[in-house]
Length: 279
Image 1: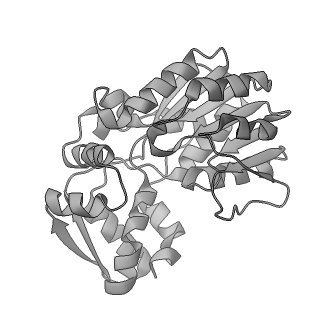
Image 2: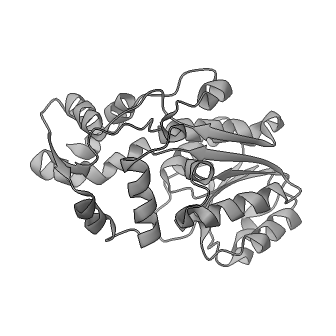
């Protein structure tokens, strides 16, 4: 049996479906009241990681746990969470972290995730750490202006990053949950090629079959917009990555292909699959 914490997220939804389709017993864990849309064979459990004991009922009989933490894991008692997980008899944990933990180790925005990674590695459990780069699904932030105006405003329009499809992350997570060969591995997950915001808008326009305008934003304009839904450290960390990525952040990682035996999906595939959100 597998437990997926963060089952309503872009990765968790797909991961839950993959595991359920394989015939495994799956418990989907979500914190809030948002409906958890899962296959009918999946058990749904509400838990809040800020109250580790609330996770305990979901772990009974579980072999492995997928763990996604909100807000980079700040304000979580990860040591207590791991005690609850270990006491329940869980054998392995797959942690969704962030590429920035490795590429920007001094950044305050990702320091909590670094601490969580360290605790997971020392937990005595089998572990796999996933460090995805920027998500293709971040383009959902453009859905409203595209629907309303067929226009996108974004900073750093010609700076490329190898954004990763969340479904690829989910498939790698499923492989790590099911196979101990991935224990002790840290996988950096990216897409197959660099993609700029301007190019991603063009891919969305092609999938939509209509032109979409692109307007550049200044960093200050982007910062003001992002601060409406992100804490300041996360905003500054994000702007640093999308505006001045390091060589490693622009590197195409081989890890998706190594685990899945195929190339990662390009952004245009994500755009085609999700285009109804932009109509």
